[in-house]
Image (cartoon, rainbow, N blue to C red; front, side, top):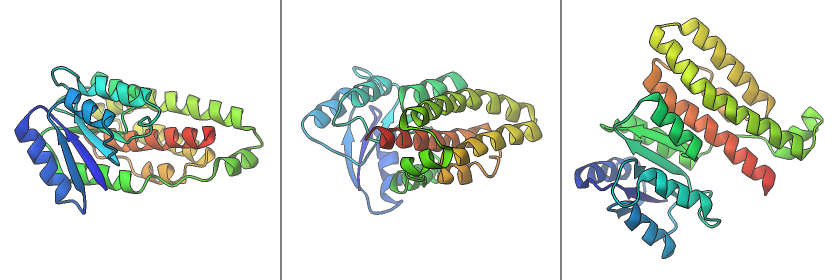
Length: 225
């Protein structure tokens, strides 16, 4: 599995490359910033995943992500943003832009491995046709449900973070259960299992919701295929 690592800070780039290399059998390509990464992608580089720093000169991580999502040949590339920023607004902005995951600096080896594991084995979901038959709806309606659920997940991220910061774990668990029920209804069994346990804190919640959001988007792409 080839992984592209993009970071203008050499030390951070080397550290992340080391963590990825020590997590399994990965072939690693590197780029010194977003402009370099884009040049390599345009030239034909096709990694299985990209880990990209958020704030860089010339082409930022968000700008590179936008270019990738707008390119038909690259649009489905799993794209994990990396940043020292862990505020709600930044994480939500990354999710809205189509990031597959989000890792906070300084790097936590377990968080890096979790992202790699999720990329190697996307959360299980049933065939869209089976979901349509089970719910008695057509593809257009299922697409609308998935789009609505994606918006619900984006809104829930901020709500759940606030509840966890306040220590309102019982209320947060209730919100999480409703999201889990939504996953089950839409045939996203793997995502539902991921939401079975309430994370210990807000920092641990972001990668969980990012994985679920990715599962919803993957299912929508399967529907359009």
